[in-house]
Image (tube, rainbow, N blue to C red):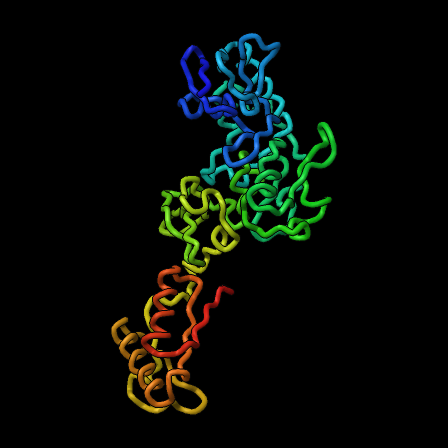
Length: 361
C-alpha cells in the first residue's frame, strides 16, 4: 500500500491508484466534471486540481498517481481560486434556454458553480451558439449550447458501448462535439443506447421522450422485462406514470449500461391497448367447434380458466395428432429460468422438440 496524506489526513492507496481514487475511497470530496469512475481519466476540465508539496503547480488528481509520502491539499485558497476561474470560463460558453431545467436531473456544472459561489446569471452566455434539438435521433435530445467539452459522451460511446459515434471537431472556442464527421447520430452508427445521455454532466444530451416532462416524484428500481440478462434501472415515476428511465450505477449486472429497449422502450407500460387480463375466444368457452371465417369475440376470463383451457387443448392435440403437432414458442421477455422450464415442459411433458425462442421483440 502507498501511504500519503490529504489535508493532513493519513490515506492509503493501492499501487497505481490516483489521488482522486484514493480520496474518494477515504470519503474526501474532490470536485470533478470530466471524470467518471467507469471511464478512462481525461484531466480536461481541471476541476480536480490539488496542491502537492514540492510540485511546481497544481496537479490534476484524476491523472496523478499517489506516491509514498505525498502531501496533498485539496481546498487551499489558490486551488479554490483556480476552480472558480475554471467555472467562470465554462459558464461563459454555456447557454441554457430552460427546456429541461425542471426535470430534476442534477447539473454538475451548476452544482459546483453554486458550491464555489460563482454566479450563473453573471457569467453564463447570453445567446445560444448552436441549434437546439439539432439531431433527428428519436431518443436523444442534443443541445450543444450546454456542452462543456468534458468528452464523457465521447469516452462512454467508445469505451462502454464500443460504437465511437462521438468526437471533437475544430479547436479553441470553436471546438464542439459532433457525431461521426458531422453527420447525424444514426448515420454515425449510433445504437441509441443512451450511454452518452447517462454520462453527460450538464444535460447537453438528454432523453428526447421526456424533455419537459418535469421531475419525478419517486424512483423505483426494477429489472428490465425485455430479455433474460437481468439489467436493472430506475423508473422515474410521477402521478403513477413513468416519465423516464435512468441508469442505476449500483445495478449488479449492467451498472450504467442499458440498450435502447431498456432505456427508451417503456411506453408499452401505459399503452391503452395493453392486456391486463387473459382473453379467450367465446366459442372455446362454450365448447363449440371453431367457426369458419370470423372466430368470434374475445371474452375476458380469470387466469385459472385460461390456463385450464390451454392445458386441455394442448393435451387434446397431443393425444389426437401426436406430440409433434404441438409447437412451443417462448418469449425473450421471460427470464432464463422461465425459458428453461418451458424447454422441459415441451420436451418432457408434451414430448416434442418443436420449441423455439423469439428474441426479436
